[in-house]
Length: 398
Image (cartoon, rainbow, N blue to C red; front, top):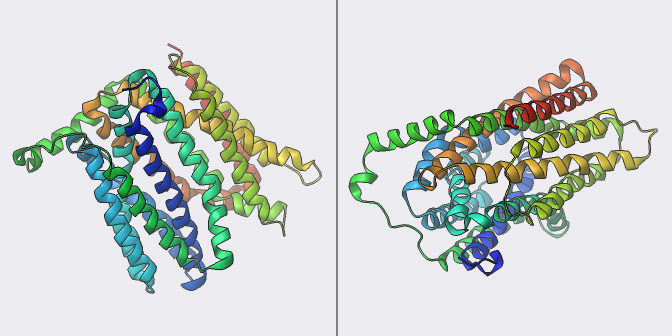
């Protein structure tokens, strides 16, 4: 493997494939929200179900998907999921039934649940250890750039075409991703038929991965911290539109500025960390990450319309700085601390626990806001993140 990461063609082609997928996914999420709300006139319950269908497959299938990533050619898995996802997305494009659309989304989400552990574990297989932090930073940057520009480009498409055109763009992105992956060499021989059909072996692999995470103190602590972090994050995001509409009525564009600045902060920290060779003491990084998230959340929650608008816009940028540190370091830690033969399973378990946290946060966010008020909930989330930062420092400093 080359010492220069950008001369590693396997990584650059993979990163290009993943970036195209990320942008396509954001087009897709944006389009489906518009289609369900305006074409199908979906009720709030259906809209909630739409969001839930993105979480439930990863919760149920995450560990199994991780075992698949460990046993088979990762390149081939990503190629198969791309083709199947393209076909299902075209089905969504042609679907005019809300029931059929929900079914296709569930099937596609189930197939896509293979992608997260496969992509994350593939990085360690094609990148040398001394370039692992740099590679982790670039994959995080890819996600954040798509988060910033995906909805913006989707809005531009809506000026000249219907929302369903965004689904067509996503289908094309899957095909382009497949063609890029096709140029990469197969990374692992397909195992024997006996291994493929040995159900006891599959159960053993899932159990082995779970036992490894549970017995590995560092991974266990970081998994617990991440569950709380993502819960707070999804509660914050799920209520952000309502909060901004309440304090700044008639200014819907502010939401785009806030989300964009958060993504910009995450991209900046990802770019900075990409210049590091390694990380040894995780305590300081998680402490900084969670405290920055807490300060940013507190700034938004306490904002008053009599204040300068600067304070509203600097807060999500600070929040994004913390989120970027957390994303990069968490991904790097899992790759570094896990053996390659179990890396897919570890990422699958991580995906399942993260999606449980996201699903619960999505469901409880509205309940908490109705009970206490958005501003109060945001201040509570900020205090929780600050306490989480202190906890991370105390638990991880050794």
